[in-house]
Image 1 (cartoon, helix red, strand yellow):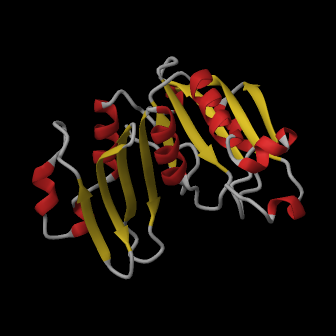
Image 2 (image 1 turned 180 degrees about the vertical axis):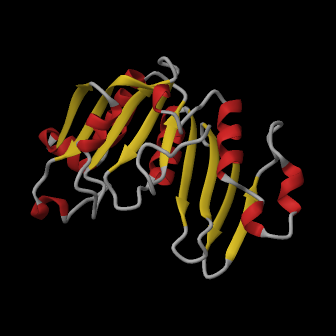
Image 3 (image 1 turned 120 degrees about the vertical axis):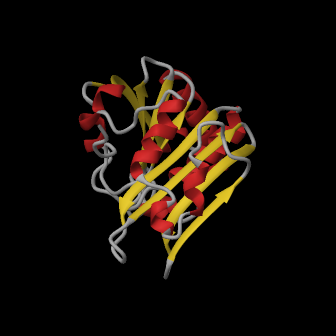
Length: 213
């Protein structure tokens, strides 16, 4: 039975690689930027152990920038979850970027309540390397919208995409089933392991004026 994503009201991402591999790739990508290549101590990487909640606590307080990124083991080492410290999360940019840089397969997932129509703002995006394979979104943007990109995946419930009410074309339960077909169970805490990596931008505000992720 579906519960909630680990951080209620925020998006998240996944990479189909072990957490150590994902952490190494993300650190390498971040350090490739000129600022961190010039001053390596500006980026600190820590190995964490414990419950996922203890790792999420290290992201607090959220915002206004992506100062901290958390990678967490899940799926018995086959997947890595991605979270960041931005107010609404920017998993879309980070997951797409790292998939392109490292050739990973990745998923972006968002499931939160809309403040406007009471429905759910939902997003499911699948990346494979440099290619965005599939994207499905149901969002409130002045009105309820439903959009797709790419060819439907074999497990999609495409008959629902023509329902009259756009908010019924994609639901949280559908997202859960779509994820399950990929071997992802993001709504269940038992899916998450006991270890992760935290990347922290520890530069001063003055130093950050010249470059942000």
